[in-house]
Length: 294
Image 1: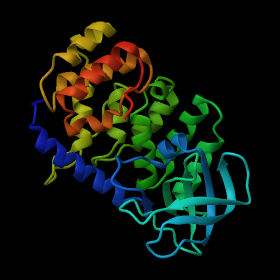
Image 2: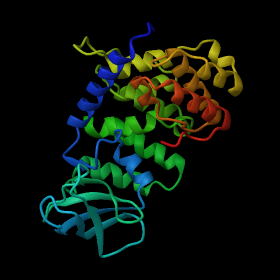
Image 3: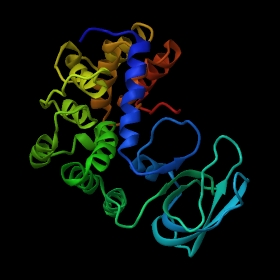
């Protein structure tokens, strides 16, 4: 794959992320953080619940919003919860009377607030994910979401799965066939899932933007000399690469994750062209097997 300037790849990434967000029902997420699926948020949150917003601090006011719990998804069961609202640029947007799924940190900080009906396909997919009590069950829930869900559900589940080699390693032949059957001729995170499983994928039609997921999938899919290297040699490839967007470095990190069997950094974010300093962190992560903390 011909290397492209970091600025071009970054623009493409932003366009792809925007398209994915447009496919998902209204949600309020704090600040301009990297995109996180509801499955990522579930992993990160201390408490997750389906709620009805009973009271807010007031429009654009800081304080605690009172939330009546309709269904507990994570954490101990409570009749009510409190979620922090802020009057800064991180304003959550709680609205009285609205039904939502809320993701809270240990001190009530709001990681995300998604206004959704109980029958929303994303809510149903999250419930199935919550019910999965081991990695194999999680894989089944995600594959089901990709194989049967509408585009918004499919893309969220595929985004989460594409970044997790420990779950990809558990996908059996039947699940692979379902994922292949679910692939559409459009640019979508599922293409990266298929590439990391070393499966072929349909090429999306020409676009005014570069096909971000298809380009990344094409970069990761072929086998090459990196497949024969150990962790130390792969870390060296990551360390010595070119500044910004470097396909060889990205491929080396993908191979390193396959060997360590865990996510060291979300593969779907590499298209932004990490800085030289961050590549040094990634090389260290490759050697230690510990995810980058950021």
